[in-house]
Amino acid sequence: MGDVTAQRSGATESEATESEVDTLRWMYAEHGGKLRSIALRFTQGDRQWAEDVVQETLLRAWRNIDALRTGGTESLLPWLSTVARRVVIDDLRRRRTRPVEVSDAPLEYLAGADEVDRMLDSVVVTEALRALSPAHREVLVQTYYLGRTVQQAADTLGLPVGTVKSRVYYGLRALQLALRERGVDG
Image 1 (spheres, rainbow, N blue to C red):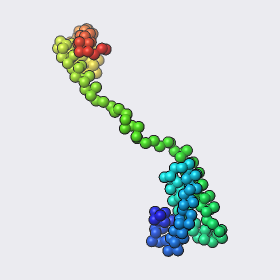
Image 2: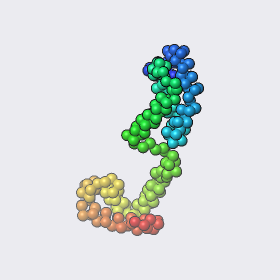
Image 3: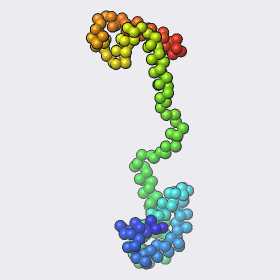
């Protein structure tokens, strides 16, 4: 109740007159239960939303407290009910214009990126590369792991381009065989 009274047009509760606070307390005591029932109906049973609607309705009542005092109506419930209905309508419109909010609960059970598989693949490939001759291993590292072209690898290694192409071809065949021996099909 205190958070409702603290929001009136920038005023704090200490700036509200005792009469305004008493009137708001009376409104809540007199109409709070009925207003909550009405809000529950408008929100299709969503208790949290209904409580928010009641709070917003009472806040608006407080902002218009002078007009409500002099309004001359016998009961404030019709006015409060109308305001509550408008609050719900405003909330629904606001929800339609915003993307749907989702919780992260389904992500709890979703498998995350598993670095173990990548690490194991790396270990198997490293073992298979060690099984190659140094010449084949050298050209494969230059062309695949370092991303160099055949020409760049030939320049770096001081070999003719044809030799590098040949070593890449036979090195890949040997690597494929070494991986198969380790149970990796590729």
